[in-house]
Image (cartoon, rainbow, N blue to C red):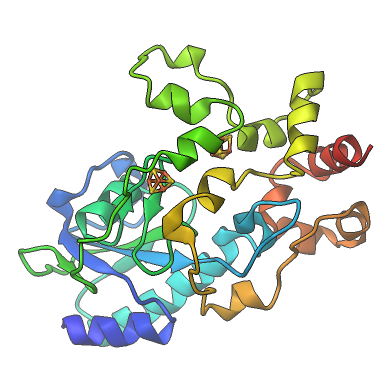
Length: 278
Ligand code: SF4
Ligand code: SF4
C-alpha cells in the first residue's frame, strides 16, 4: 500500500508524505467532517515545497500563485487517484481550515522539525513549504510511516532568526513571557492589516523593502541555504517576484483572486506600495 501511495504522491512531485492513525492527530475542528460524513481512521500529511528563487519586495509564498488553488487542485487529483485505487474507502482533503493541527501531524510524521522561527523545517526544502493533509477511513499501518526516515537534521538553535527579527516578535516568543498581548506585531501581519499604518510601521516596511509579508527569519536560517527550487510547475510558471502597481491594476479579478496578496483586496497592497515607494 505504501509503495502505491508513494507513486501517487511522487506523480504530483510530492516527495515527503507520512501516514498516521487519526487517533495520533490533534483534532481542532472535527465538525468539518460533518458534511462528508467521513469517520477518519488515518491522516496522510504531506509537504508542498514552494521556493522558486529570491523574491524582491514580497514574501516568497506570495510570489507564487495562492496555495489554495495549487494545492487544492493537487488534492483533488490525489484523492481521485486514491479513490480509484481503493474504491472501498473515502478520501478527502481541506485547503482552508483543517480539522486537525496539520503542523503537529507533519512533525509527528517526521516530515520536518520545528525551528525557533516557529516554522517547520524540512531536511531538503527548508522552511519554504506548505503543509497539507488527506483524510481517509482506510486504516493505515499502526506505526507512523514517513517517506524519509532521517531525523538527525534539525534546528541547530543558532538564534540567527531571533537576532534578525526586526520587530522583536521572535525575541518575545522565546523570552518566556506568557502575556501575548505584549508581543510586538510581526512585520508580516503589519503588511496585511487594513487601516492606516503608523510612521514606525511605514519605516519598517521601507527599511525591509516589503509590500507583502516578511521572510527575514527564513532568509537567515542556515537550513534554507542552497535549498532547491520547488519541482511544482504551478508555482514555477507563474511567479511575481516584484509587486508593482501596474501588475495589481492590470490583473483581472480572477487573476487577482489567485494571488495570496488578494485576501485583503487590492487597496491594501496598493497602499503598501505607495508607502514603501514614496
Ligand atoms: S516574519 Fe519577520 S517580523 Fe515576523 S517573526 Fe519572522 S522575522 Fe520577525
Ligand atoms: S535561524 Fe537558527 S535558530 Fe532559527 S530556526 Fe534556523 S537554525 Fe533554528
